[in-house]
Every structure is written in C-alpha cells, then in structure tokens.
Length: 132
Image (cartoon, rainbow, N blue to C red; front, side, top):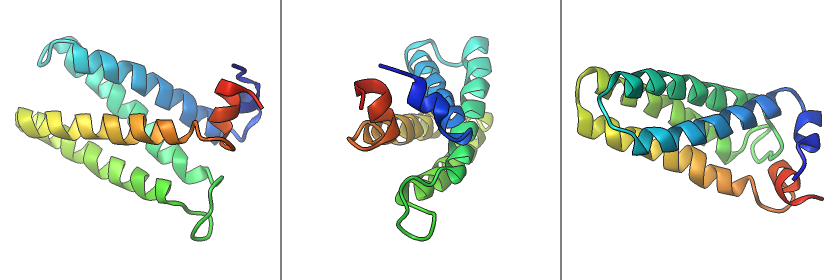
C-alpha cells in the first residue's frame, strides 16, 4: 500500500478519499454505538459534514467520463446530498425509523458499495491499495 499516487493526484481526489475513509470509520462507530445520545448526535453532525465533503468534491473528479465530464457516480453524489437532507430532517423531526433507514442507506450505498468500485483495476484507489 502506498499513498503516493493518491497524494500526487489533483487536490479534490485526496480530499474526497480521506473524507470518505473518515466517514466510513465514523459511520461504523455510529452504527454500533448507542443511539439518541449526545455523542451520537455530535458525531452525526461530523459524519454529515464529511459526507458533504465526499459528495461535493466528487463534482471535481472526472476520471470516468460517460456524458461529457460526468459519470453515474455523479448521480450518486446528487442522490447522497438529497438523502443527507432527508436524514437530517428525519432526525430533527424525531422520526427515528426514517432517519435510521436513510443514514444506513447512505452509508452502504455511497461508502461501502461505491468504495468497493474504487478498488477495481485501473482505478486510483486500486493502485493505492494493491500497487501498480
């Protein structure tokens, strides 16, 4: 494993990747830890901020170009942004079920599944994790 290729990439890429990695770790903590507590709410806001960074920085990453500079991953980013709003709104309305489903969906869709796709051969994170 070498962070060299990641650190040599355009600035949006390492920012996106490090925010995603931090959101992944914090997301696991949030899924396991007790809910409704002050730490859960505080860390939840940190997680939302990290996910905003992940989603927004993706609009400056254009490694896969299917429609002009855009790819299906950019649609996932738009979806994640909308779901973040819904998840926060649900929490503020004390709709625990909707909040839980929304935030878990963002975690698994935008971090786990999308993260696995970054490990495909030819992608930068594949090179970082497995070498050239």
